[in-house]
Image 1 (tube, helix red, strand yellow):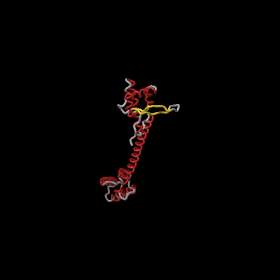
Image 2: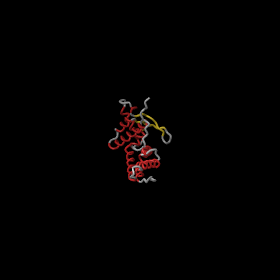
Image 3: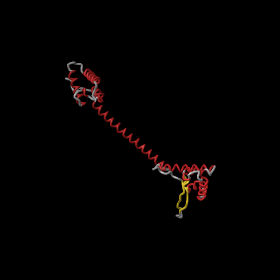
Image 4: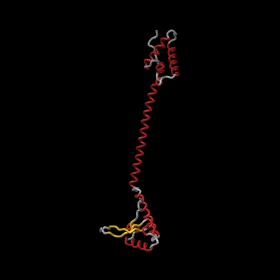
Length: 221
């Protein structure tokens, strides 16, 4: 069933136009008399009652939006404009309430905006924290990967070249050089804990080269 349209009490109208309620009642009754049988007065004005401060039941009218428009024709100029603004705002307010939409006060609206902003900031900070954690995890993974990567074939040749340069620098006797090659390769494996110089990790390449260049054999025999 459709909800009946809300109306404005003649008491509210009296307050809007700044007149005594009895005078507003007189105006409405005159308008009703003038309508006669030409129009259905119920679509404009509905007879009703209210209880005053002395707990007495007194007559009043409920005005529909059309009734307010009709009543407003009795006023001209600034007063008529002010009344039109007031009753239109009042009907809009009632329409919002009928749709379960409660207008927020300025303070409530401000609180809502601040809460929304706080939520957005919190969400943004959460995203930043998550991104930071992801970057940390990626960094750890990269470090672990780097630790596992061994020398490329080109880097292996570079190590062999450094070994040969060092051995030939130390010993001119071709019969002794093989022993020095074996000794240097053995010390590289011991120093860097690998089974072969080929298993040296890439991140230690420069350290291996520096070690070879500063290497001194234990003995030459």
